[in-house]
Length: 428
Image 1 (cartoon, rainbow, N blue to C red):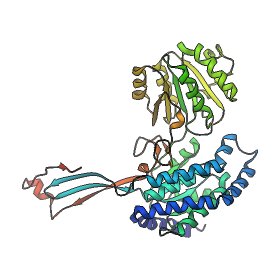
Image 2 (cartoon, rainbow, N blue to C red):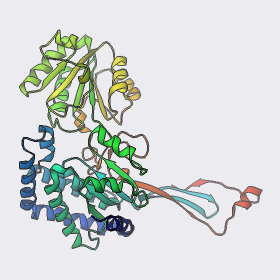
Image 3 (tube, rainbow, N blue to C red):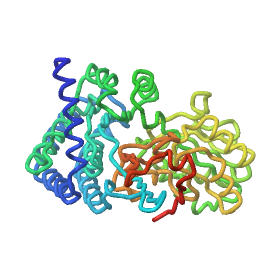
Image 4 (cartoon, rainbow, N blue to C red):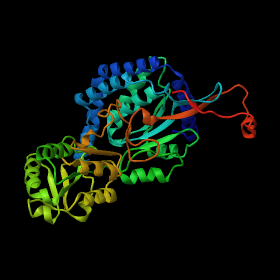
């Protein structure tokens, strides 16, 4: 796209976002319902276009990418249910977060507001496009979308179906834009005048590239290196199914477990059991010398210690204590999602307190780190940042706030001189 026209189109999103933010919740919910219906009505077209992507990608990408790329009835049902969940959530735009009387009838209010225009760059995962757009409509944010090249046909099809559905509503599709080229990505990274937040999803190298090449705030995570520590007090009837689910339920996901740390006191009990179920599901184990002394498996290389496999492979290392496990997780993990399997409350509380990750679990699968499962309706991604949003980013993560002060001619000089005084009375 010609440079001036491209910038003009991005600038138009800023104006469209203000109109979207000013729309009523009922208008936004009706627009989402139109998208929900259109996805079902046009599913054959969407599946056909997704089939083109799958055929092109065949033999050229990993099984993990193929798993993400596929958009079938199951994923369609999931994203449509997600839209209904988002519709059912309270309107985030009208939320009053603080209300305080500074002085008599001098009222300060903190009100939730949309971030503005969001640039979303995501992997070859068509269902993510639907989730992102749905959350942005509900939260009053405009969106620039750039999906992985392997999903180009799928993304075009989904964007067309969604845009056509919105154009039949008062909202229209004016707050949405789909871009496809690397040149366009490079351009939006320079548009801090119009774009308020960039959310990149992809490899560590890609996320780092985005961070290094923009002045726009960036939200997201680079790696999904999730760990499970099997404590000496672990119940094996819990440990085995939880670890299995964390690895095999959807191994291509960023919240699948990649590193299992086993207390040496339970290695002789846990390792043969987990090997049996992993062998049945085709999971390749990379184990350290202690692990290999108990079970037969691949050798754990230095590059495998905390590696994001995104496939049916996993690393296992023995540790001598919970403190060693926590130290390893904090030093080498990606601060995404980490879990402990333990029946000891002190150990669980220590893990919760000291593990420096966005999501910290006990006795449950790492795969629960998800916006839908958290009751957020859906998510635009997982953030390992400690500023603004952390963990699954749903509606609340797409909101900022503004301070609104309503007075009757008050001036600071009166308070500075002592003629008037603040009483700071909280009203909510």
